[in-house]
Amino acid sequence: MTVIIGIKLPDKTHNAVELQKILTEFNCIIKMRIGINNSSIFCSSNGIVLLQVENSDNSIILEQALLEISGIEIQRMIF
Picture: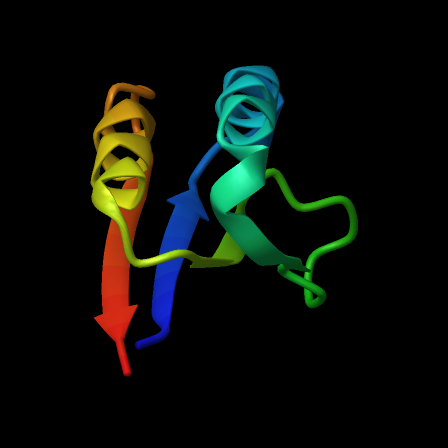
C-alpha cells in the first residue's frame, strides 16, 4: 500500500522552518518528497509538498504533528 500526504503551505515564509523540523524528525518513514511552487508568480509565498510515507502508525503521528502547524492543510491519498 502506498500513502501520499499532500501538504498545502499558504505562507512558506512563516511555516517552512517548523515544517522542515517535523519532516526531519520523521525522515525514516518518508520515502519520497516533492516540493511544488506556484510557478506563475515569481517567488510565491505558497507551495505544496508531496510525501510518500510508510503506511504505519508513525504516518498518523506525522499527520497529527503537521496539523499543529498554523495555517497548513493536509490531505491523504492511499493506493
